[in-house]
Image 1: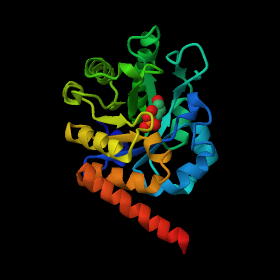
Image 2: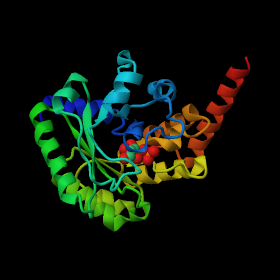
Image 3: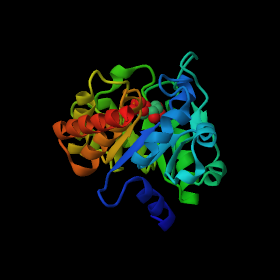
Length: 270
Ligand code: R5P
């Protein structure tokens, strides 16, 4: 692997711990103004100091992220569909590699939709992006998307998707946590991060999922709604960080969450 590629990857997956907490805020590219992400700048700004990387589209990057913030950017470059459209899987590449370089990104990201009528199209999108990424030293993150079919998130299906993404050259694979997750990790030569998925019932559920994913071999999380749809997003991301980087247990993560929450409440009162 070339120096530039390695350097960019190390901006995302921190060499000190070998792990990463990416903050996903790209949901608007097909969901529109998602709850608590209506004004992206308001949501993103306070969380930036606590994230290792930001997954975002070029529109929100330019409009809502301070270029001086120095946060590594994982640029979402696929899209062209919407939640009310015909088929979420029918994605194309929306953003050129030249644009990605202009934006000084650390990686580009796209979704693949294995097992759908758009399987080949999205896998070819990935292959082409990897060709360009290799040429310019820019890593590619492939998301094994399931669209509206959240029930697809099982080890057999996700192992298939992750392995194909890795075979086609993805430098990082983003998938969902599931029962038997070690099977997904063990059969995917590329590092894996997990998405959080829709907001879980309790904070502890999110901490347990994070812990179990790390324990079974994920290098980190690329989490969105479980952080910023929580009434205490900073406490949430700090707790997730403690589990990912410090190997805290879910209970220890929860203690971090409670401490941070109390600290912030006190500050507000002053
Ligand atoms: C989905 O494809 C989006 O790209 C999100 O980045 C991803 O789902 C992670 O966010 P969340 O943790 O909210 O699922």
